[in-house]
Length: 321
Image (cartoon, rainbow, N blue to C red; front, side):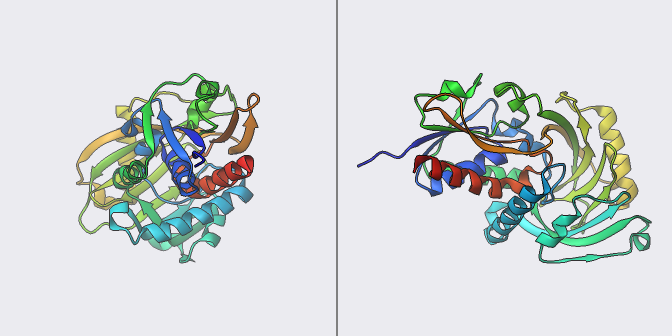
């Protein structure tokens, strides 16, 4: 009997775990390596909801986003997955270059922002997938473990360290690709969020879109709500700022007054992996050392993850064939 090909996935954020899932679907042996525990990843600092934020190019992102949306449609039937669909109000003070996402969803309509107190260029009400991160990510990891995937906490200096033990490596190292493969086109987009107690009756999320580094978002989840946030290019600081926490709470209370009496439960910082274009391609770093790079997803990791994972699995199968 031929042993399955051994694949190493670097990174246990949402990009790495979805890739591992699709590779297991094809019968490969999968080991996941991470420099940090799941709770410390950028993915755990996210809200999250489906929308292509600061992720490019549009053509590839659109296809990946649609495939991911369709996967969430399937997952919402599994209560323990933490995936559900809810109304999202989006008020655009500037023209939104990601509004093409509306063409990928099942339910949306244009609304008059002024009627809601936001005179603006564009405004939409759309039903979107919400990813309850503290539920979804442990669920996904446990599913992988039950299917035989192994997890390792290890700091790797480069993909070359994984050979010859593995037949192929998948680089889902996020912003750390800046160092892991020396890609200086990758930069951090520092995102601080604030977690608050859930106001009674608040279900829909609200986003005020502007082109500057403000990121105003109120996102109710199952047991709490996430307030966003910041989008600070080039800032590597992973420590929450008290000043940012106060500013985020006040700017969110302006658009959703229901949160004023909520208790602040904590703050988190994630470094979104900014890049002018997602890098998803096969590279032979040496003879018999194939690496599939899958990083640079900006603030759209949860939006494109399953679509990118499908492409990684396809490239892997083509390589071994």
